Length: 487
Image (cartoon, rainbow, N blue to C red; front, side, top):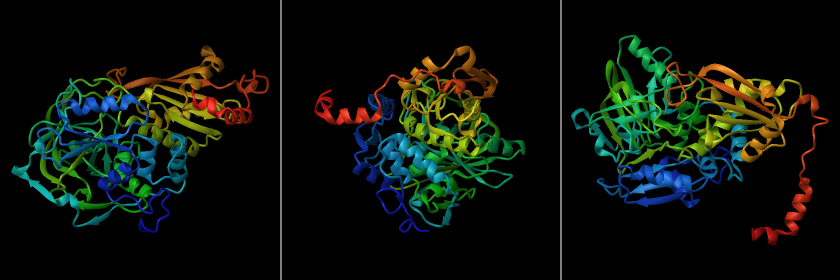
């Protein structure tokens, strides 16, 4: 089904063709701010911090005229970091609140089916090809984002593409990539992640691991790569299912891996067993330089493919909020909600992953209780499902009258409906990773399950909330609109 005839839910009758068309649409929507003249050394990271700490749902930043680089070379951060840009990415209607996007995501997932890519022989990514001795990673304005980073990172808003040597499926995930020199880079992959499992399969067989690193692409591909798609399903296929039509891919020259035909920059190379170099540190999404420098496999870059005047994607992890955390909260909430319902949990009225918890560490479920133990069942499933398990910390369930996105209301519910000795449980030895500043060497931490619901057996006689009824609030707000507008 072509994009022109698909029932596209947003304001356009077809999905954007590539990153460039997405930027045009986002700029028309007032979602882009241009920043000319930034230095790749620290200034790009600092500006991303200033903009994203200034207000919720900050605009994306398009860096132009970057110091030391040709005028047409650009970089962009925060592409999907607002409800509106995320809706634009996914083809949803213009949202009134982030929960609108969460619900639209869930509605789509009821019928979502992965769509494999279409292999083509030509694409804009082939406009320029550097081969072997021509390879120079410093061709691009690779930023040093944080003062104490171990180097310059070309891979932050990226796809690291590998083919499983046993199943033959293609994984496309986001992992950080540090440039070592003109022709080599290093990839850091957390233990347990799918890319780590694939890489280790090659190494256990004594074989080199082929890899592509895509550093500027349709934000829908980054969205898929940055979340937990189930093992064995390619993120390219998953993103195609959201797009409603296949992405076009070109097979790479050396290893025959699929690279997005409309990508801005793609590196092709290979990693060898026992060929390592120190990587890191790097300021990460938890807000810390959480992983010490360590020996990581070296990527020997054999080809660089790039468009004319390429646009490099940047994600700047830091003390939250970051330029990816808000969008991640929306998608992560939808994924957890979807997985909980598939596991048989009924009565879910809302899910939210809070930015202060870096979209992973503080997750809230709003629930209409139907039976004794319902809240505890919801807690256990939310903490253990695929989308909620990695680097978790606190999972909270609240009643249906609590907006899970409103931290004040959540803390109020925890303060007035939770008996600490009865309503807080713990799960030990859960999956974490080196980026968690509290994780020990075994990369396992505990989870706190907080039942902040009214006790089920007291629902009928629990004290009523002291608040005006909704119809009265609406009527008075209308009557005194001029007063409220002055506040």
